[in-house]
Image 1: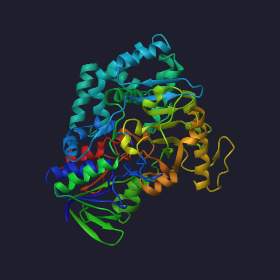
Image 2: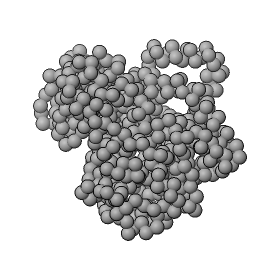
Image 3: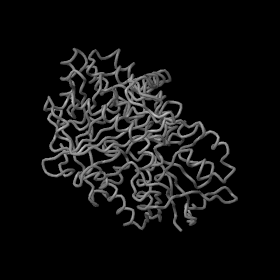
Image 4: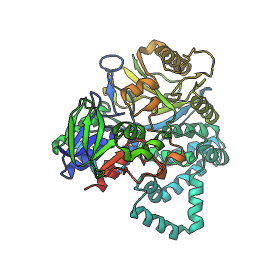
Length: 524
């Protein structure tokens, strides 16, 4: 028996469990895998002594979140510490040209003006406007949409801006990244710097509201950088686990929830594990899962969820993700030394290159020249590798969930669309060839390489359907008021005392812990 049973142990589940435990509620976290953490996972994936964040690595959203404001001091008491890079992000293009974004607004403005007269001034104006709108904007992005507080906020903004002013705000917020960048910035390098970041929101440069999200990310990177957990992401998991246990909570691994039990009054009463064990919940059940898991598996025996079960069939997942990790004999020697200080470096031909790769991946093709997001954790956390050695963290956010073919016509793909080991390694070779063009003698530095295809990632985390790390496509029709389903109200379900959280719910994906925070603060 527990007050709240929580299925899943990703960032949202751990935030919710921690906040409820601090309120004195008895929580039980159930994780189907042998370890907790969801997409926060560290392993010696290549060579002993080299610690890799196998999936997520950057915690900027968590540092800026209300969850961190509430839980940060408690987690830090239990050993959580962050390493902060000098330069959060940058871009490197095929011709060797590069551009970085620092945490210094004046430096950024000067650098952008040097590329094209007026680009720095435009960037300054955009950031100042976003800063002025930040209280309203971040309330929309991270608040409880169906609430009296949100209704009062909308009324206040309508009064302050006027109906037409509010309409103009939303009209501008809905423009794509291309329609933000091309009319207002002359520098192709600036386009290349900003365009890849929309991929980390589950969007593409032509997606509705991707322009606003690109601005939000630039604002966030200036404010908090691109921090990683010292020693590896597993250390934040250790801190969360200790916090929950210190306040009477319990965490069980290898505990696969197969069903939520519902009584005759339509109330969740507990869960059944795949082993057959039944666990009661006196206050309710919280599930950090996708809609298809919730309605197609956990509530499969409850007829009251038939409408949601039918709608969940149409819940769409986005592009897949692929990860490549390197153990190196020493840090890479970039042709420009400044690049060695960049936390997350994007390698891309630019705005059109990102669009092309997105288009290819969405149509099931291996992109000819994908966007490469390259992290250099040991440049600011040397504890991740033996002295003098280094690791690289690579993310490919434009990977097809099912492989229909190779856009370059070089890699043979299976007729059934499966990611095989051969396809994964051949595609990784394409990425490595790009690295070799930018890093002298790169192959001689490599001690080991470990790759994870979209299929591998789904095997590790059932929520990553087809390797989609964002809990479902983040297009406008499946976001905000319409996430996870069109009739959803906050994190409620048709079952009383059963709530859904996670990346598939508002406010969406990322390591901010938003849905866990919103639900836990609303519960008694």
